[in-house]
Amino acid sequence: MSGIVFYRTENRAALEDWYTETLDVEVWLEQPGCTILEFEGFRFGFCDADHTETEGILTFVYDTPSEVDAMHDRLGDAVREDPHENEQYRIYQFFADDPDGRIVELQAFLHETPE
Image (tube, rainbow, N blue to C red; front, side, top):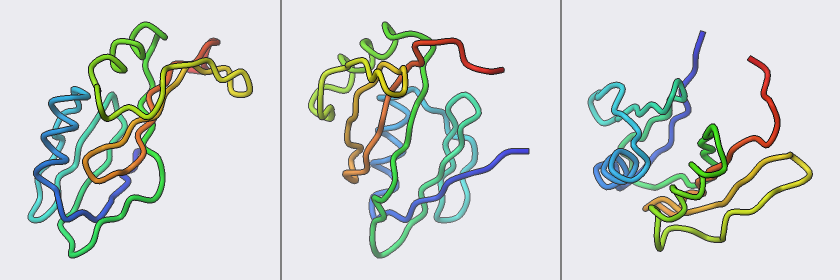
């Protein structure tokens, strides 16, 4: 079983470019008016609309803090903060904004995760 999260956007082409070029996300499926992207089994889509939805956070989970650091360097002006340890959730993380202003979180767990 799997699922997909969809967002409405006025800027689908720019989002597809940003996610595929900056975060190495792959296009999973192109549909009329919608693009579905995938990152290691995490699927999310953007559909053409007359308004943009920016609610929620898209979280990308990496295996190590060094991968999170590398993505921080790669995202440049899109980042909101420096990577840091979040003791409450035992993660290493930072937040950034995609081209729509949607919050994107990049993190690595600092403990073993269940399989």
